[in-house]
Length: 315
Image: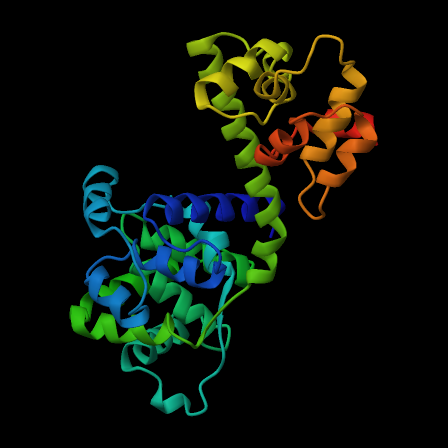
């Protein structure tokens, strides 16, 4: 299977999972749940509840989507052929105990020279027939041509006619689907996981580009100076509005240092006031000699969110 096919599958599965509020971490369950949302002739809600009793899907959105898109949320045969190629089933321990509907399909496949051995192809054909808004004849022809390496259009047409002459009630189809979509189904999630990170990264880049375009349309082109640290005036204005003293300017305003006190001393005091793991108050005497009531005021207003670039200068 080509990387293009895998990328298409992962992208569609993630889109459906996000749209219907389903868990997108487990790729196997996401694939099975997406198949359930595209079934016909059966109750999708009953199938989902039987296979995933603790799962969630927005069924109101599902009904609206089926009404608008004709039932198939994932696409046509270009999606489903590589998707079904990821599905496989082991041989049953007792072939005669296989579900009667699948036995009948297998018998007709042998009759029209479409059987390649095993139950995987027959199960894929049955699943393709149950998909909404997808041509079963076209799907069967593509699936069998790939395996048999010959033209199978006529054989598939006769097989489809034989199945139509012996229709199965919805309850019978539900029992078959419950069996083939349950624990016996194997999904090649390893192939999907390879493309998952690439797809998510591409989607994130696309969403980031859309946000930038939206930002530019509303507030203008982003400028580098908008990302710079707030100016001294902005920091002082914020401290005043919030009644804090976390910035260096607010710290100086609270303590009202004399004009003759150098910036070097002020920054060192700011460094001491920002310490939270040891008792720094006795060390103010090493920074300024004539303290007065300064040491007591410093102890009353410690700094919990300092300007880190100033602490770096002191260090």
